[in-house]
Image 1: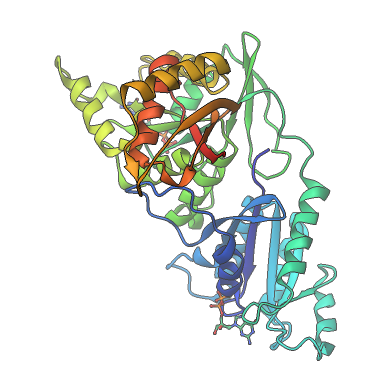
Image 2 (image 1 turned 60 degrees about the horizontal axis):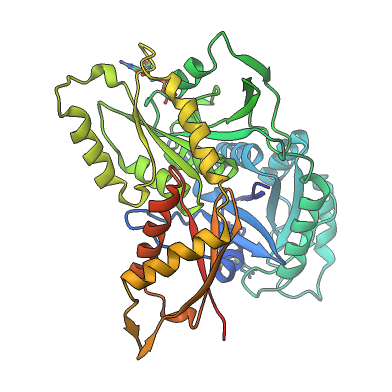
Length: 437
Ligand code: GDP
Ligand code: GDP
């Protein structure tokens, strides 16, 4: 299941960032640092009692062009409502209800989202008298916390995951291949999507996502179902939001999270940009499939080596995603756009490829014979046994004498050996080492 998204909204200074850091700070799990990928402090991957979710502080999304608190709050609330499964609406327990709070409450009530009213700065739980006025906001029972003193945070997290259970397991689990089309504005994402779902395709439905407001496009070709996940550019956006880059990046992130395969659309005329690298990095770190679609190929003057040179540039910029196939297309002329879904199918099949334990162990045994691990801390790594434990993404568990002495470069070596045999085109593979005595 896709990870639920929890957003925090509230007036400036109510304590949103403090809560964000409180929740994310401890539980943030940075699995791997991909060089060249900047981490955004406005979202964090969190975990509570085995429930994973993404936390977003919409306070970080503030268009400079807007000066009144009311207008800023509206933008924030709009973002929060659109992206979230659960909205945390934070108010200040010391100050009481303000006019801006009332206005945001109204927006949230209309949106029919799961909303938790969080009353912050209740540093001393003894004096709870002023909690009652918050019922006037019409959001239900307030949860009082103190972000700075770390009071009530566990109860709040319980409440959050309780809402997941209430609303969410209702069904993204269909059997379609989920595709996120990502890339910077104007790269041609909408044009490509329109070409892919041209007239001869059957659009199954254009229904609002079950858990979010995103509009997904579902269609079917030769019995295979696909879902194209809405990202910036597909849908009409508000003028204000369009100008907020952080917002468009976040939207891409949330689409990536739900995807099996990401199409990273690059404008051939512009090459790989900083924003492309960030979004692709997110796809990589979340172990999503990736296809690099170089669009507007019609604009490029070509000779024999054009493709090769372009490919080299892309590989250099996206060095971590060597597995991703590169396709050059033109949404304008239609050139090779029909290859895109073929590539999606292929990558999806690789993501679901299961290899037999026997063959896997033969390959690893041979790999070790050809290239012994170096000793680390006076100890040599021994590999006992490996098995594939998951697909989509493929995940391998390797039992070793001591998982703390696995060198990064040796892991790479083993990954390459696995890829030499099974290819796993277009998808990251996950290798986990576990100590066994
Ligand atoms: P934001 O603008 O909503 O992100 O608010 P911040 O997290 O930056 O917090 C604003 C101010 O409130 C800071 O000075 C925090 O130290 C303070 N603050 C945050 N949480 C609490 C709390 O639970 N109790 C008290 N007394 N102060 C808090
Ligand atoms: P998005 O913002 O990524 O969805 O990009 P759009 O699909 O809206 O395309 C942005 C602009 O690029 C539009 O003016 C398109 O007509 C143009 N465009 C899209 N694909 C191509 C292409 O393959 N070749 C050329 N020359 N222009 C293209």
